Length: 337
Image 1 (tube, rainbow, N blue to C red):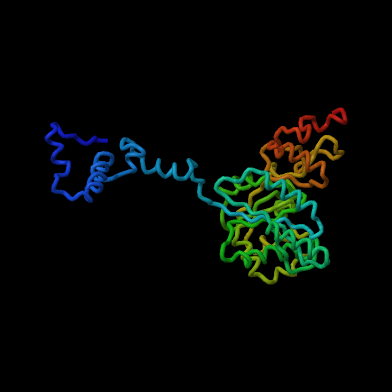
Image 2 (cartoon, helix red, strand yellow):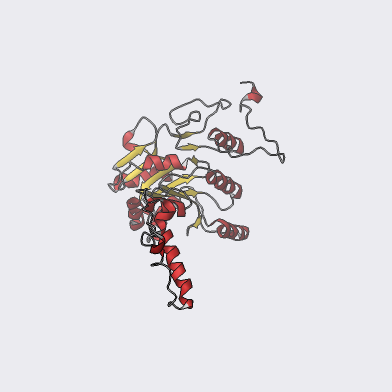
């Protein structure tokens, strides 16, 4: 910053100082003007005084400081709706899933919205208690149907979602069970490179045989938004549910010419297994692995606890005199394995 030059002789100051003919009420105004000319000589550019005119990115620096020093998050390039199909009375399971998903690190540059989905509320207690959940969490979708296993609930879900979110469509719509734990960041990462039309993602069953009849296992599968719209617009699918719904769903895509961009996530999606179980390891059932997208068959609290511990969900627990929780013992110590 170029400093202002000062007068070279005492007589020069006379040209700055007011003459006795200047009215006294103008002296304060002239004094303020002199001070500003000395301190802010460069056309009053205060920003350069604060941040230094030598900074080539002074505007960026100023913006960063005004924003508290935080860098901007990457733009959202992927939006996924993951519906957990469950029943109104499974309050404990929903509480566990909310807790488990809330402690996951959020996906980068993606949004994965988890919603709990069930049919009409037929019991008095469910109408009241589910209403409280809706007020508190806003994460429940109630379909216009009667609770069922293979009687059309999947159709109701996929046909309803495009109408509910017509103004803000997602890129993908997924369905999963309440005994499945998705790792949302891993799911988002694997979907980034997938097709945005005629896309069918999950775990193909039966594994390694009968490819002409394979379908995505009910542990969880994702389809592109256009497929959900197609289901919503195809009324004849409503009564086409002869057999397990997930197998029927794969049949819809084949018959409708939508079975095109199919992505099998084996072995990153699988059923839970540990060394205490009598079942053998097979293509769809094995030990927990770090590079997991989803784990299925979490049927009890112990399986949930071991799974959440494996994926470091408890890492945020801080030492405190208020409690003593031992998280370091091996899960098989008590059986001597």
